[in-house]
Amino acid sequence: MKILFVCLGNICRSPTAEAVFRAVLAREAPGLGIQVDSAGTAGYHIGEPPDPRTRQAALRRGYDLSSLRARIVELSDFERFDLILAMDGENLAVLKRRAPRDFARKVRLFLEFAPELGVADVPDPYYGGPNGFEEVLDLVEEAAHGLLRHVREHAADPAAP
Ligand code: 4NP
Image (cartoon, rainbow, N blue to C red; front, side, top):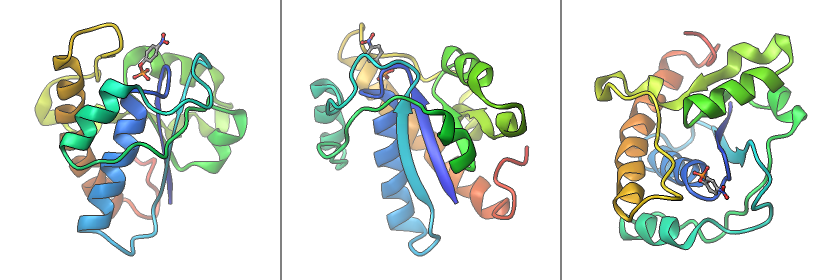
């Protein structure tokens, strides 16, 4: 199974989700064989490592994002990945527009997997204060556990509702 996390720039939210979900898998479900990646709907930062504020906040919780590099979502991603998880409603709308019709059902909001939060979007921290980076981590950590529960229950068809 392959899961892609998507935000706008691929330097704050989606690399955080990639690293957190990978850590949850390593700790709680090693051997499940899930591949994880991230990308952005925009190409402003292609080839760059995650934002320094994102890297620092993540490292304080034990996630090392230093090897990640930003890339843009490609058409082939819609075929290659089994689940494509948008960080906010705007990312979702862009992905739905770009997705070939056969693959549109793979595109979902990441926070669907944490309905107890009552929040739809992981807010973009890029133009906000330092607390925004902690908020991203709080939301992403919660949803990563919900996503693991979902993929365990729907291994045969991860895009199932
Ligand atoms: P991200 O945050 O989508 O969580 O990676 C952003 C990073 C950069 C920009 C916007 C959002 N930007 O406009 O450059």
